[in-house]
Amino acid sequence: VFFLFYKDISIIKDAKGASLTTANQDNLGYEGKDASRQLAMTDLERMRTYKNMITVVGQELGIDPALIAGIISRESRAGNALQNGWGDHGRAWGLMQVDVTPNGGGHTRVGDWDSVEHVRQATGILIYFIGRIRGKFPTWTEAQHLKGAIAAYNMGDGNVKSYEEVDKYTTGQDYSNDVVIRAQWFKENLFC
Image (cartoon, rainbow, N blue to C red; front, top):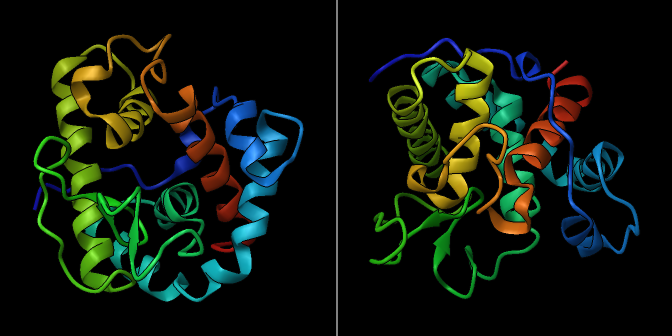
């Protein structure tokens, strides 16, 4: 396993939060950091169920557990958006929505949808993308690599073209910006 030193999601200082499209999933009517925080808060009680598992995987793989929670919140609303563990019209599996389609991620489903095995697999995919983004953009800072990898987790590293437009091709055009703010909120309110 290639260990990285992305222990603290708070290294990212420029995240803008959710787009209006993402915020309107909960009929918020506003966007930005406050929208991301509200979305995370809505998922908090469900997320508590997974806190220990997330902490174990985060410590094991060197990834801030709050970041894992931020991805779980965005991808599956802490399991609330899944049907029998499946989301995205049967194309993605588990809390972190691992893409199993041949033309998408092409991953094999590992573990139950809410298992340590699944979270470990999905976090491993994030780590893979950190490495890919580091290789693609060697002059970026550690924070930029992490944010770029979060965007790549959603739509692949080939779609990360520049830092200024890191979310241009992501779902809602806000994926990394939203996940970071949700993760920072979980760090303060669940993993404190």
